[in-house]
Length: 180
Image (cartoon, rainbow, N blue to C red; front, side):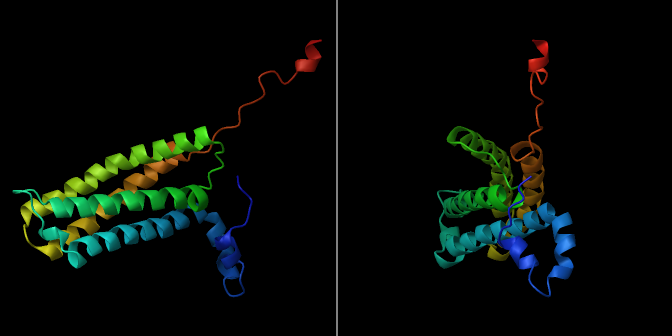
């Protein structure tokens, strides 16, 4: 496990916050996932709001297809996935994976898991658009609801597949010298 202190450990060690340090260390992974999951959701929602309500992409249609909603949603999700990988790797799961190949494989697993939730999110938002066309408040509520499901599925996938701790493999032949 990574014993290096990061900014969050240093914050918890400040006077007045030390009382929470034990709780923080005991539940660090879950607390950090909630914090950065919230930040990732904020990045996603803020970008969606920017594209849909500032740039008015929600009014772009290609026939019956809400192309502007789709594009704004896709850009928001891809940006949020990149943000989530960096924060999950560094602060939540404290990945110790090194080397271009291994980090690349870890990133591909992370993105692979996120493709599933990308489909859930895009499908959920498009479903809201089809059921409530032109209702921008319901659109944003639908986006928010899909985020809750996405956060839960992403945590389980990240914990069990992407950033799971590797078991220490015993030396193949620890008594190598005794064979002589």
